Length: 488
Image 1 (cartoon, rainbow, N blue to C red):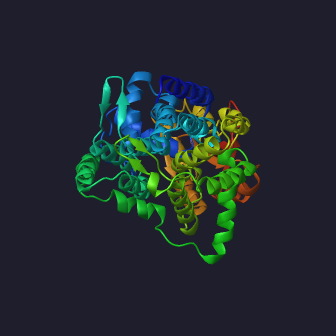
Image 2 (spheres, helix red, strand yellow):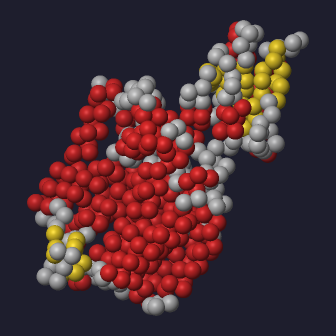
Image 3 (spheres, helix red, strand yellow):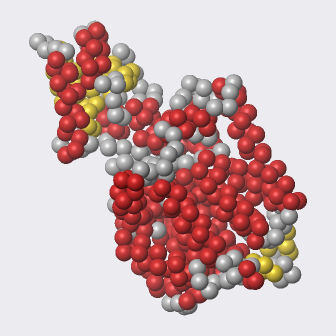
């Protein structure tokens, strides 16, 4: 790649930073983010460095990376977001370099990087504490190393396939979803002409992270059960029932619309993906080892995209935005290649269609990834309990992962209750022990949650207590009540 091409990539990376930076301080924690950040804090203060007492069901690489930043910046939420923020910025030039390695066209590289910089989903996931942004960057790094030789000013050097295996292994110990991309990487290695020697080196690189994961799990539990624990917590895997397929298709389509910035953009991208799979290279133009040229047919990527989408539709897995994130760099490769191949030089004008969505994502206006209201006001509720004395009890059923983070060093004991009847029994036994008791409930003004809170309120009244609302410093979707004995 020429110096001009590199400067364009760095310019696009700067644009990506412009759209991503505000969320670092504006967003609040989703429940999963709060849980992961609480793991990192347990490690950072050396209270539970192996997480032996934590409900861990995911590989721990992100948690340990987050723990590195807490001693530097203190217990602030954005410290837990920094690993993903850095990874999301690195993703932009890495995707551009991957496009360059695959298609040998600088405009394709810049267009691909620009797509990742402007799409709402990568923007709103950039400043989060989810595992998926780090996973995505590590997967792209693995594909990039596997795609061929790298050039530097002093000449050429070849990164061993072991480096690709190392990055893939790091992706695996970030999130097991990385295994879904193994067919893509295997196909790329085959197209690049890898022999058994290259694959053996790749496996050596892979085994280093996997070995460290196994050693960590054995040290903390004495067994290798992390995968089975996650599957059990997940509820197992099954095929969708026939009556589920159409609602699932509608839900996924709506989610894709938010990820792209509009359902009409999803249609545009779908058309481009189909058209982009035709005429952009075939098996006869895949490799030319003497010239160092690597061209990969876009149809190869389209088949993987279709397989990935169908798998998440047919299997009865949750419809979550995070599952779309690792696929977007692959989509960007095909779309970026087709736009620059067919519409050169007007392709970059077409990419301006994504600017409104990028601007909205900059301010967290889509209910995907990270956004300012993601915690439903849990931080505001925790602030109201800052001065609570020892012995204070917070009864909760819905937000326990949030309290693990926001009440990490507080004097409040969080008591989870499985049902209204269990809460009534708890109050009958301990409600009048002289300590402050509080209850966190969903805001009953939020339509479908009205019936959720009502049985709990009735149980409190039936046990001989009433709920006194606690004023909060700002609006929240969580209501805090002090539990007071009737007659006091």
